[in-house]
Structures are given as structure tokens and as C-alpha cells.
Length: 274
Image (cartoon, rainbow, N blue to C red; front, side, top):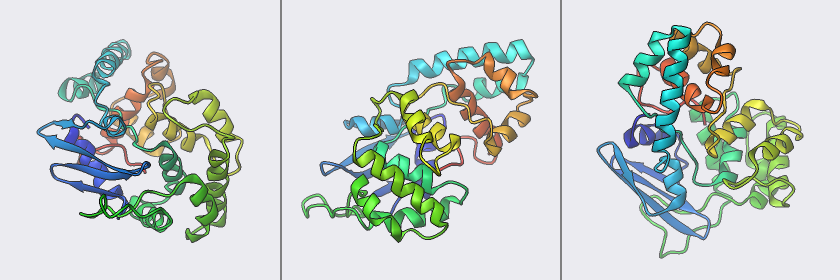
């Protein structure tokens, strides 16, 4: 995911109908306000005047990405992992995907657990129907409504299909956020957020780690993730935990490299997650 086209390629199969639209030259979506935000893409670059979409495309993270590359390259040399160093040289400064709506991302992370992208998007479309329609002046060109608020998700989670335990987990999380019991936002204390979410039945380490990553945490590594482990093996990292210890502070960048290595057919694509 070296540039904006990689972000678009990852957003496209995950786009929730009526809420967001991905085109070859950009991305549009409804957001609370309500408003419709737009990012345009030309070449490898994205441009937007909306701060929420700037996070999606990691537009302000170039210095941090280069710093992470330097740390990972040093660790690769120390551990003799030539393939990782080569991957960094070939595709420097992988973007760390952000999110436009933290509350929506929490729901996406829970719904997407242990199911395919297609199945998760279908489930999210069911929830999206609960959201408020946009005013006529804003609606059109595939954008019809905002993703539902946490109160709306809590009240309407029964529209989901599949395990009752997952539906209950979505409802519990939405209620906790809607009542203010848990703060989920880019400005939240991420450690406290993770701890509080883990206290909820049905919310596990993968979900809170993934959410934290999308909220900008630079030091997330999901050791139990199958694609992370596969990518590490393909990069020649025999002991991922030991290698990661030398990447402290930049483990999200390491995870992105592992995800990219696990999907060699599409090296510029984002991680295979919701």
C-alpha cells in the first residue's frame, strides 16, 4: 500500500452501499454532520480538505513512515532478514490505513471477525439501512445515508445475521460507546480504550488491536493473525516476537509489511481485514 491507489484498491471491496463510493479517481462517503467528504486521487497521491479522509489515506504520516522504515531496516540487518530490507527498498513508506469514523470502525472490526470481506460487507449493508438518510441537497451519485450512530446500532443490531454471540457483542459495544462508558475516537487514550473494550464479552485482542491500528497506533502487532504469521515466514522472520522486540514503537509498520508479504499477488493492497 505504497500510495493512494493501494488504499482505493483496499477500500473498494469493503465499501458499504449507500454510505461510500470508490471510483478510479477517488473516494466519497457520508459522515456525521451530516456531510459528504471527498478525496481525489491522481497518480500515487490523494488530496482532500477533510481531516477524516486525510486519516484514511495517512496523508500526514510520511515522516513517521520513513522513521519506521529506518528502524525495520536496522532490525532486518541485525537479524539477517534480507527479504524484509529488500521489500522496504522496493516499496518504501507503506501507508498505515486510518478511518474516517472511529465508531463505525469499531462495528466493522467486530462484524468482520472470522468471516470473509464479502460477508462482512453484506452484514454492514444491513446495519447501514438503519442510518439517517442524507438531506436531498447532499444525497446522490451512490451516497444516500450516514452509517448509523452507535445508539441506532445498539437498537437495531438484530438485523444482523449469523452467530447470536456476535450480534450481542456488537450491541454491547455500541451501547457502551453511545452512553459514553467507552471513548472510541482518534483522540482517545488508546491503552484505556483497549482495556475497556476487552472487558466486554465477545471483544478480543484481535478486534481491539485492529481498531487501535486504524486509529493511528504506531505500535500494534497482532501475533495471532494468520496472515501476519504467514507474511513473517515469507520474509524469513523465524521468531516474530523476538524480531518485533527490536521494532518497538514501529510494530504497526512491521505488521503492514507482513500483511503485504502474505498477499504477493497484490503487494500494494492493504491488509486482508475489514
